[in-house]
Length: 172
Image 1 (cartoon, rainbow, N blue to C red):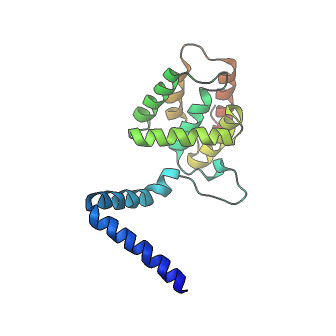
Image 2: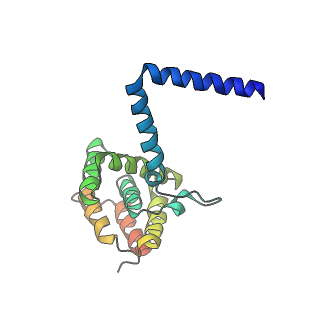
Image 3: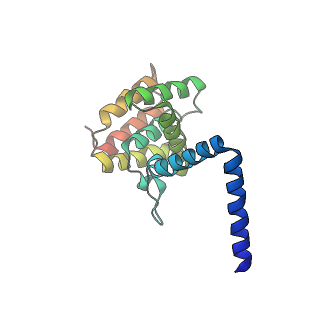
């Protein structure tokens, strides 16, 4: 017990000394920690459930839409930097989110896609989850993002992806 008190005293003293010598940096660090703690649950936007797939924990339709869009541009080959940039711009404009939020959603969407073992499985699984979240109300917003990404001609895999999405979202 005395050793634990000694360690805590030493750590407390070191922090006090650092704060006293660097007050501006200490305030910025404290502010960053507080902001991170406040935004962490919202930024992850899904809850952890034991023995459940990560997609089943998504509660935000914007993250599901972003992950579907990322899976949509990857079925045949890795997307080009132009396609990634176009996706980023579309997410910011259609989902009305900030630069940072769009970037975080892209990272999370890519991770969710890899958890589904690639774009093929991700589109149907994410589509079913999106149906559970909003009852298929996001179909129009999803189309506003997917159609510009598709360009002039859809590949065979993208046509199948749209068919899977229509089935999952119960769109006629």
